[in-house]
Length: 105
Image 1: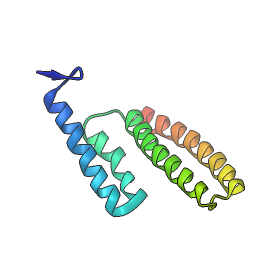
Image 2: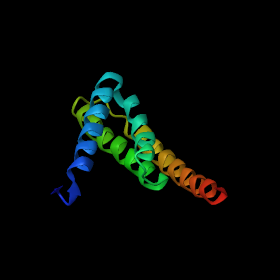
Image 3: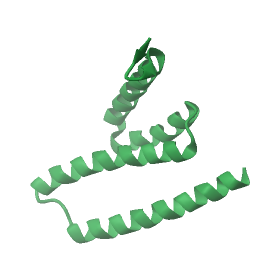
Image 4: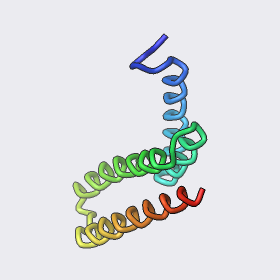
């Protein structure tokens, strides 16, 4: 039997994984997102997909948090631009490093 083009077991696994990450995210705040990448790799996903999924998870929650803090007048835009530039550079360096490690085996 299929649901959304995937087996019911796989949909159940994703749902359970999402629930677990959500609960841990609630306990630890953003620190819970460090579980996404290793859990996806244990589930058999390539490192590229796991890392990108983890980044997407952090990005989505960061945007929502920034919008809420902006409404309260607590956003330092100059620092935000510097952090975006640094994060982007770090992601690119990390990507190059990941590919180099994969090439080495």
